[in-house]
Length: 424
Image (cartoon, rainbow, N blue to C red; front, side, top):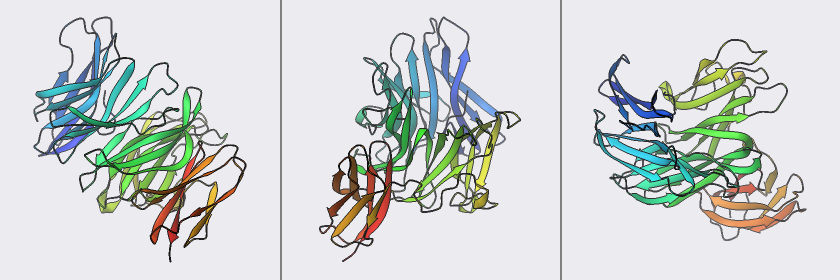
């Protein structure tokens, strides 16, 4: 089984590598083994290898989610090891270019916590950063994103949990930028809804030493708004993609989305896409990559439900550099305008401002709302709380240096940002 974002890479020298898992009969447990394939330029198989149990009782599942090429031409993979009777562990494995195991390590698996590794990058100090997920069965917060850093031999050095401690979140998908820092994309839960949750998109920039350079939330809170991958483009901009659940009578069950921010975390654009429009049909965008002429290519799947007809199919999109389909932006369903945050709920004025900024809510909130001011590097400079029942507060910005800032509004259910300028 293949198909997770980052499960197929172009190694160079006319070779490709793919990872996943292979299921075989045996024992009284699901006999999953990690699976690696080496393919030539025509995608003919050169060799395959499996990893995991080699003898009975076959009571542990192994799955590889992602593979990357290391600086010296070896391979690093991450995934999960799930024994029958104990919690799962995050699995990190290094092999040579022929798939021969050099070392492996397992993180977690103790107590009642389950760990999974979904993405991996090598850092400029030779170590590895893993984007994962951890959860505890039976707890109020069923799952939290996890960023974990190891040295070159897989020994843990630090970890960050950027999730909401009271609401379920999502896995972390990592990439690295040109300056060697870690870019992490995930979700931040805003509200529980039975076994599901409302979430916003969270993107962070973290140094290899574990220092958070900036940490921003984006987009309107959506029901099961899952982020599926994070990518750096040639120009340094960051692209994340995923899908969100709809509830309207005349819209598909799931809509896909792409969010782009610059290297400082400023939102550039956000767009939503549907191929199937029938109520209860599904549109999943699994991955977005750099295409030719600075354009983008997206890939996923669609699943029709009547009145849509047909079969479950692969979905491929070719877009320009700002996410427009080549035929024109007016062909995109659910389009959000470029440079316009799709959320609403508050205003800031005057803009530009010099010494004082007014925060005005569109409507009174039934609970306290937090507004934090951050600079273009994501560093918090001010924070105020608008109490329940109030619609307006003023904040002193006289100590801020002239420049561009963002006011980020969070009332526990939705998070949005507005850009303003401080001038003297």
